[in-house]
Length: 256
Image 1 (tube, rainbow, N blue to C red):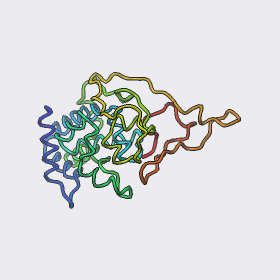
Image 2 (cartoon, one colour):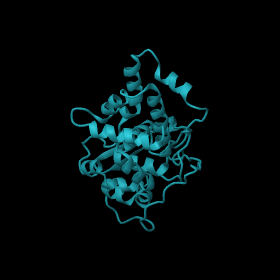
Image 3 (tube, rainbow, N blue to C red):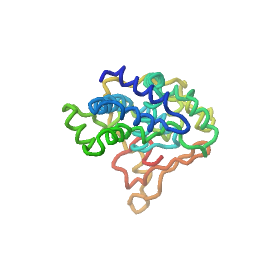
Image 4 (tube, one colour):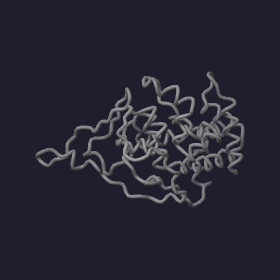
């Protein structure tokens, strides 16, 4: 399946979705009208576009919008971005800070009690549901996908792009000024000019992560503290795992 056909499927499902049928169900229903091979090829393209957003700057955007973002949460966020259609996907790939203009983001930012916009776990499983509907459950989707796919694999070991601290408001303002203006308390204490960061290296060069807080989380006895690291957003509380639970400092902590 070429990429144009993939996006045609997404746009068709978007047109069919509505208050009575969420996008993931519309997508599964439409995929179920196509062939078994089409469903497998759709999932292969989905994995491609999903992996292309595995970048630190996109993760930082998810961290602001979600009031924190775990690795699982970032998987859901990228699925939700795909569900927004080709135009929004391209816009976010070029500049994650452009999400400050997304209607769901602007609607939810003033009211932290609303559900987190754009996080959509169910989208990742639409092809599996469609496959089950088509085959009657006789064939296992993931076994079939393993046989269909070639030897290449997407590595999600470490996100692409320059590392920066999601809990540092000044750094977040420099990289994502428009989103930071929506979600972070106003401050004039930014260091350096506030400009959006360029899109990440398309070759997805990896950078080593660092644990910046290991020393800060040790008590007088030298043992690692179990107290969680917290960070305040406007009306929200970011939560990351206790320092003793981290093997390295993943961007955004472990909890949405």
